[in-house]
View 1 (cartoon, helix red, strand yellow):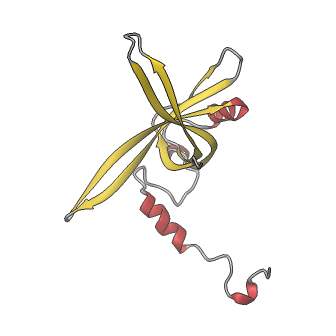
View 2: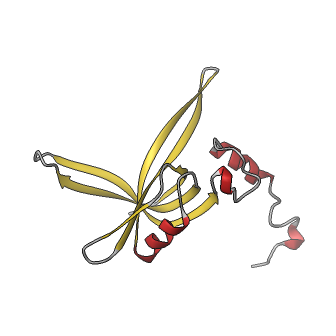
Length: 146
């Protein structure tokens, strides 16, 4: 079985840390992913919000390094939580359990990567910029033989 998630998005609020009865730190934050698509000749955009959890020392590090507005790449797995509401109704929620979080850019006031200036940067723009990068090998003679 495979359960892997890779998500590029922006934090919608500051991460919150809490501690389980065992003392294990748990950090929670939400990330928004904006999807742009075309219908006929008109561009549309829809936002998707994802709740993310991290555990242990990793969770403590995240709460110190991240804040609202940061663009991050989250790598992790899906986890389904189940509980019963106060009315006795069964409830579920799917979250992402983070295994790795990489900062792509900070909010405009703390910009980390000068090339990324827009708050509304899209995945398509990032992919375009990545394609402009030089390939690792210029010709066959530069390749590492195996």
